[in-house]
Amino acid sequence: MALDSYKPLESTNFNNSWPLAKFYFRVQIEQAPEIGFQAVEGLESEISVMEYRPGNQQAFYKTKRPGMMSYSNVTLKKGMFQSHADLYTWYKLIAQDHNYRPQARKITIELLDETNATVITWFLADCIVTKFTPTGLDAEADSEVAIEELEIATSYWEMQFA
Image (tube, rainbow, N blue to C red):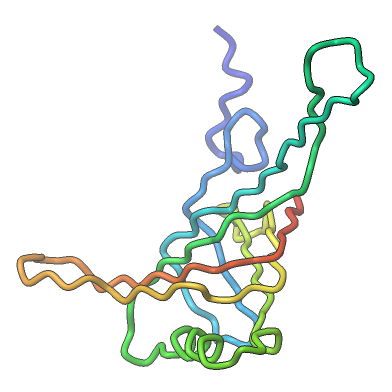
């Protein structure tokens, strides 16, 4: 058995034989201070399918064609701090102003390797907070920290590989 692919001293992210680790990332929200997030969920995109059959087609089936692309809402989770009211303030501004466009922001999510280099970047455009969930309270929890969640709607996102 050859051990050519196993090189423990090399960066695992630069070695194509190992998948990327997902636990080291950075989230930057336009007009917000640097905030550490615990999780990012929902980076999904989908192309709808349109079914079509011309009226004069002899075959008795519909063809399928790509339709509109849609993007799922993204959920950001972070520890709750007394001094971190920026995201809740952003949520309230959107809720109170029917002209939400000035409140829409750009969000950048970077997946990092163990050397702190960016491996993949997601650029989210026209982001607004659609749901803010403060922590659940549990008097029986021994060591859990308060976690808040933000659900972000985005018009679209792009993915860039380093």
